[in-house]
Length: 242
Image (cartoon, rainbow, N blue to C red; front, side):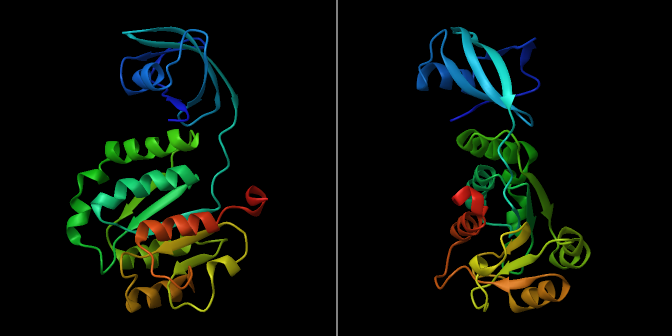
């Protein structure tokens, strides 16, 4: 936890915030081993970041004097469309998009997505939020990605994809594509990533007919979570890599 993420519904008194005994207070006490007078990096969920001075710490919780002076980090230039992964991989993927600062993650259906995946409790609102918060705390971010679920492939591609791609390119990850993602312009874009085994030919044909262009991520076959990390790493803005 590299950022203590404060919530609007925490107990606030002016510029002071009380964190009741729980995960965050325990982290401050037992992992950071903070003492009265220490300063911690904090941020308000959905808002600014800054510092929090420990004013009191005991078995009931932690009281911080908070100064929020810094804006959140910039968002990633890619939004992601991802075929719904296996449940055991989903939490890791949610953390990853939060760590990279993705603004929007669209989880979609695909021919190779098992129908049972859509029944996973990990798709509940509070489970998604918990996974995103874990990534935000790690990467010192206060803005959560927005997660959208689309359980039907064709209506998503025909009705929503054109609107999502309006004014920006849509890249479809496909191992046999002639163009590499690294060869595309460094500009905002939407990137589509298929399930294990990739999108089936029909899905590629439909998406390219509507809005997309095929790109490859290299010669190797990648798992979904590795492909996502590769896309997001390649999509970092040039000024961030300088």
